[in-house]
Length: 356
Image 1 (tube, helix red, strand yellow):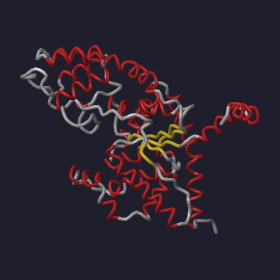
Image 2 (tube, helix red, strand yellow; image 1 turned 135 degrees about the vertical axis):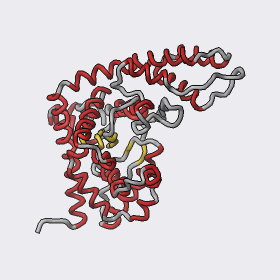
Image 3 (cartoon, rainbow, N blue to C red; image 1 turned 90 degrees about the vertical axis):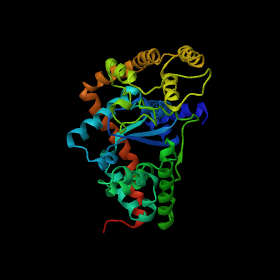
Image 4 (cartoon, rainbow, N blue to C red; image 1 turned 135 degrees about the horizontal axis):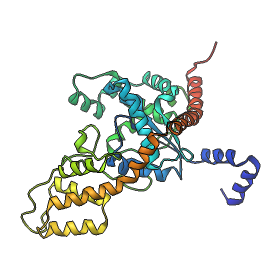
């Protein structure tokens, strides 16, 4: 749209209405994070950093996936606290409720209804073949609940409720996104509608950064144990303690030796939070067999503290501001329901669910 046309619309409908108008013209992005604990560096570099960039360019719906966390049966007290913590940390990271729609999943009953409608046309066989379900069966054989089986259907409801076309996801979620396309297309065919577009993975022109854990393998995560992750709210002393315990080895045996996985992880962490000069210094020390991992870890810990300090301070500040956090949650729910209620009305109409 040309600038004169934009100015004309602003004059005619006013600034508030114009913001809504232009938001509707933008492509829709949807993504969420489970409320199973505090956000860590892996969440920030793997998702939040991209979310912050996206909110200026797209019509973004970012939510706290508290329904998804129910598969692990948290206590009511932990459940509420975790939801609030993630919302506070979303804000502390830089998500702006004036630029994006920021809401709690359970504040939208429309999601639960669409989840039910999609489940009616999701087949047990395809859900059982899902990689994540097979993995959960292996990891938690004593808690194989229906929520785990239908996790892809709930994720599809999260996406399709806003008719999103762009979904920021990592490699481990691409199968779920493919299933969301399957469920949306199946609904369209069965009820002869074009209600749901096909959503695709979207990372805003950049590769998602995978942050390794401190345990020497895999990625940083909440479920791998407290010592594996550096949380944005961690105090400096705790960060130092965690980093000094990070897995390393006895050092290279020959010059320019290929780094083993655990050492690559340490350098990846340093690449994320340290200066280029610091990284280059320790690379050189490794290549000439003079590296002292104790010194490297001390430097890494201080760089992590410096990086997370603004987030930690903002988290502490917002945690005390109950009014602001409540206002953000309520306003986000209102904005999200405008989109969700329209989708549900059209889905019900397509199916034939109408008042007598």
